Amino acid sequence: MTDTAKLFLTDYASYNDGSQFEFGHWVDLDQFSDAQEFSDYISNHFAMCDAKSPLYSGKREETMFTDYEGFPAELYSESMSLSEMENLFTYLNLDKYDLLQVNIYLEVTGYDFEYCLEHFEDMFYFDKDNAYDVMFELYPQLEEVSNMNIPGVIISEEDFTRDFAECEVEGVTYCVRL
Image 1 (cartoon, rainbow, N blue to C red):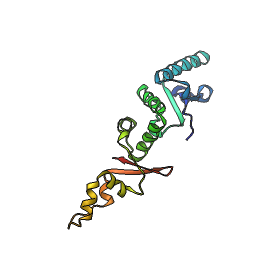
Image 2 (cartoon, one colour):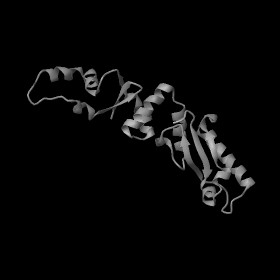
Image 3 (cartoon, rainbow, N blue to C red):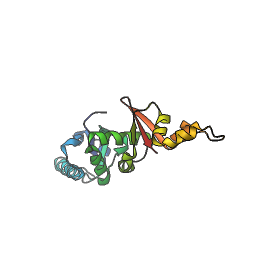
Image 4 (cartoon, rainbow, N blue to C red):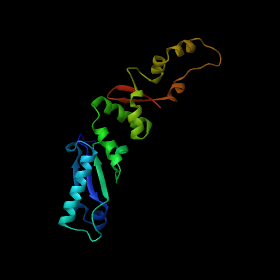
């Protein structure tokens, strides 16, 4: 993944007409402060395209993004709505630590971006060897129960991993509450 978030902008009419590369182009998203500014750019770009080379079918109206770089697939859509663009710009404006956590949450849980953005702070960072150690860190009372050898009571890593998933990034283990 590149550092700069980009979208290849074209429109469905140009795509169907075979002229998507004449008027389509890569757009660096870091030149826009928010989704509305980007949406305005798209409208202005299509107006210039229509003035230069009108389509037989009418105005270029339906935005099409045929490729993307620099952000997770979960935030990409071929025909993004303004709401989806707002999610993308929210993601792009996260600070470095929050961005790392949201990326891990997206990867580990498979939940949608809005859910991950709302819940990424539920993630725990632990410098432990495995999820079993993290379980006892979070629930110290379980270690006592585990050491009591009570018949029929077995606490295993599987008990913990039903509620948590772990992910390692650059040698650091992150546990995510599912």
